Length: 515
Image: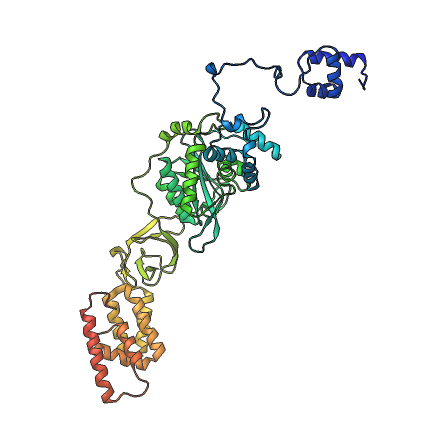
């Protein structure tokens, strides 16, 4: 022996060897090198324990194939050396997958699905661990919730998918909703994000789960939260209405606090690292189908590391506790701010809808779909009016919104028309008497014609309109636009009068808007 230990150290090494300690453990405890400790143990007649469990070096007795309970060894595995890994025949595939960034779990799942791999996941994990270093796992706080109480939602980066319009690959977005009790996750892919898309993804997730949780925990992205605040955050109105339709309450977490929704963060990372890492798809439907297959085959059947139970089994317990879905889906609407005009109406896509008295000149919230228009109070969100959509240029005025007296602003417009000319004043008065508040826009148009063509020409056109019994803004505009700049002769006036007469008859036969 090259190194001679003192008698006390020799007795310590021999005693630890007789206790069954491995050479590595003896070296750590005593500071004696493994080679030196091995020589002293052999000299003392103590069996030297190498790596592995105690007694691992002893050969097992032969087992008759007829009574063996082990699964049959595949031909590929039987041909390898006894100490070689079961993954050695697939080294090229594993190295190529690691080059694309896929982890050990994803590689094992691909080997099982595509190559009939029969070994355990631990074999792939050990083999991958030899090819690269594994980072340490950081401990996280576990938040326990009751069944059906909470779900967490978040966005992540999805796979690259070829865009049918451009023919190039584009990065998609991955939406994930994870239930807090069972860890059951719904993963959906989308091209872009908006407030409506964000809300629609929630609805799709609720339908897949067959119910809705009572609380949704989210971060402060603009699709859900307009103004982050610890105590009173401002939710996006459309998102708030969609959740209220399903009886769900939104609970935004604090800024830069991802641990509050760590379950969905882990679900996003699980999908990015395992099924989607290094993958490219030719269509979004194909990517979603691949993700759904992986969800059913692997994610739902796995034993969760925290609960130590199968996700599908826990979801079977949680699903009956979810809130029932409403009979009809949410009616999505567009929203914006509008100013109430002098006629007491707001404009939505060139159509006009009445507002209760007292809101003229103020900005209020308006929501609309293809069928309905809703007018809301700007501060409280109270529903003021709900109208059925109408055609462009038409009005929808509730009977209770019609004022019994003429507003001062309308009287001022009629006074301006009186100063512009008597016939203009008569035309404006006729329009107001016939159309009421909706005629204010026509009166403004008549005064605009007087400013454009001059009061004299406009008043003369108004006289012709009254003679032909067509006192409308449209008639005056057509008349003035066709009026030659030079004085008319009798030969020019007769065809013009005939055209205007035919135009008046056409207006009389029209059943639409009289303007």
